[in-house]
Image (cartoon, rainbow, N blue to C red; front, side, top):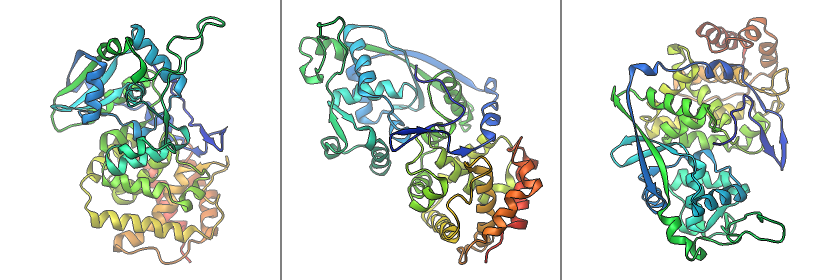
Length: 404
C-alpha cells in the first residue's frame, strides 16, 4: 500500500519541501465523520484479470483511473520494482474497483500500481515536473493524446531501473522495456492481479455509499484525501472551471504557493467558497457531506451559470488585487480557509444575488477588523464546521467586510 495518511499536506516548491501552506481546523473534524454504511446493500466480488486484459480495460476506458486528476506520484524506481515483481511472479496487493454501471469501473485503490503497468506497456514514463500539466491535458481531452506520449517534454522512455542484487552482479531486467522483455513478455502479459469489484445494489439513487467505500479503504493506507475522492466521483464542467480558476496567477498569489497542491486542497477551498456562496443557507454538517451533495448538483450547472460563476470569481480577484498578498493569511502565517470564505462570500453575495459582478475594490481595513473580531476568531478555532459556527463566521464577515 502507499504512504500513510497525513493530517497536514506538504508541498514541493522549487524542489524544497515546505510546511503546510494552509490552515484548516476542520480537517480532523470531517475525517471523524462517516456515512452509516450499514443501511446499504453492497457486494464485493474477486476477479483475477491478467495484465494484458487490464491494459486493454484502461485503454478502452472500461476502467477509469482518476490518476490524472490526482497526479501520478510514484518514481521510476518504485514503478520498476512493481513491474519486476509481476515478471517473476511475486504477488502484488489486490486492486479495488467500484462498478458504476455495466462495463464502467472506477479505481478505488490501486491507481499507482495500475498506472505503472500502463506506462510500462506504453513504454513511456511521465516527467515529475509535467504531471500537473498532464492532469489538465487529460481533463480537457479525456485522455493523453499519442503526440503527448511521444513528446519528450512530457515523457521519457520507460526502461526498468532496478538495483543490482549483489555487488558486481547487475539485475538481469535492468534497462529492459516492455518490447525487450523477450521470453518474459508472455509471462508478464498473462500474469494476473486480483481485482475486488465492489457494487452497490441498493439504494440505487444514493451515491454516499460509494464515497464511504473510497474513504474507508483509503484511510487504511493510500494517500488519497477527501477532495481527491470527490473529484473522482463528481468530475464535471463545474470542476473544469475550478481547475481553470485554480491556475490563475492572482489566486496562487493569495494562497502563497506557486503550483497547485498535489492533493487538491486548493481546489477544495474554491469548492467550499462556491458551495457556501450559493447554498450556504441550506448548510448542515458535516462539511464533507455538504460538499459532496453540492458537487453532485453542480454536474447539472449549465454553461451560462458556469460562465457567470467564473466571471464573479475573477471580479473577486480584481477587487482584492491591490491588497497585500498575505491579506488572507491567519496568525500562523498560513492561508486561512475560514477567513477566505468569510471575505469571499461577504464581498460576492450582494453581486451574486443580483447576478452582477464586483465593480469596486475591497477595503483592506475591514478584512483586518474581521481577523481581529472575537466572535469570528472563536468560531474559526474549534468545531468550525458546526452549523452555528459557520453561520456566525459568515454573519460577522457580512457585517464587517466593506467595498470601497
